[in-house]
Figure 1: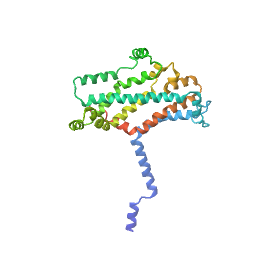
Figure 2: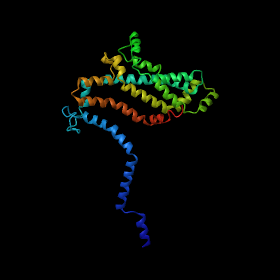
Figure 3: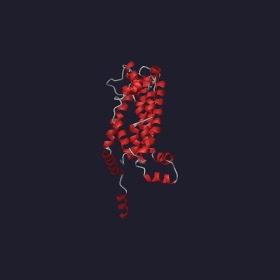
Figure 4: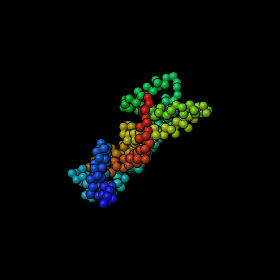
Length: 294
């Protein structure tokens, strides 16, 4: 009888397990309530865009939130309405070249501001911070006049070329991340006979991959969604439009067909979402370590 009593105590019945599991689920929901609320807040608009994209033209933007019929052909029809593949190529050209130019120009400057000691370093860093605070609309007119005198308006090069020269936000972000790397690594490389360029390429760049990935992702997403720049320089050349500019024009031409407009919006979102999913770990790690030291 004693053994039976101990067994009954050690092994709860099925009826007693269910309240424990339910209580554990409620505890999990309570702990993650803020995260669940934020996830719903950010995901529900995307769900709404998707559901509208597969609706019929007559049902879109009505009181019915669920499609009566699933019109998957909307995603094919939008390619017949506009040359989206050409706009996609222009957006990829703009975003990829701008990101590559940003990395080539920002990494050496960030390394010099973080690991080299030279007169005027703090003044240059303040200049970088000041450039971050300068709205791009302030310099739009003189820059447009400069590119116009060079005969490059109507192309994407006025948007791409500046990233090969200077990008204040990227320099600041990379500099803050490189500061978290101990100086002893650079000193050891110098003792071994490495030049500053070799120390940057062989030591700092591999260790700063999370920060570089986060900065590259920021630059790619900004250029991918950029509307003001393409409108300013390529507004009169439809063959040079990017997807963001084409989306605005598409909504203007097909403002009644909201299902097609939402289908285009969803197609434009997919590359950025896929890129973020694959780079999420490096992105979060880079943001976490950036700004630890000043």
